[in-house]
Image (tube, rainbow, N blue to C red; front, side, top):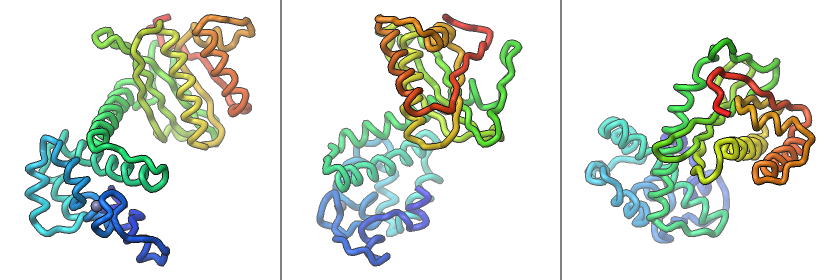
Length: 273
Ligand SMILES: [Zn+2]
């Protein structure tokens, strides 16, 4: 969003201004010129997305006021409730993703999907925030275990599970900090508990390892409080169960991408399994 406000988002009009040889017609509707005002607020495709949201009437009023995209964003964030403002930001992100999917992947996202994606994004972000606030925001003292920062030049990735009996889901929070204890990145994923809890946790570790590898952060260590998972991860014993197969996949990724890393168990007192 700050790139829209600073007019440095690489829309086609912006690229043309910078001397790039490219068409300037809108990727989505092919009619207007693709600058930020058109792409996010005037394009019929984007207007259709906005019209599916509960605060469309507020946005519609703003769009009648002859403002540029930066001022529309500032005014919307000022006028909307916190909840709607958060969704507003996700809509911008999802429209830009829709545009990029068409440019780079030749994939046409339906507008219903664009709306659903922003809601999922907002939900995940809120989950990650809740997870960070309740579990990791502070270097923690749980039971008699204190979170220890990674060695100089390294990152630490804590993986933590939470369980919702109500929705029968296991949530996996992944939280990365650097050697000054500064938050770097977080991610939250949910698995429906068609599997046992320790299987859900292991899927979480697998997903975290794949995600962290794509971030190219450098040296990183993993830490989690799932004892059964850790025992199996450290064991050379073959396990042909579903759990064993996922552990095997974790080990494969670990050996492939994390030769200078560690996966360690840290007891947090209220161990579940
Ligand atoms: Zn358009």
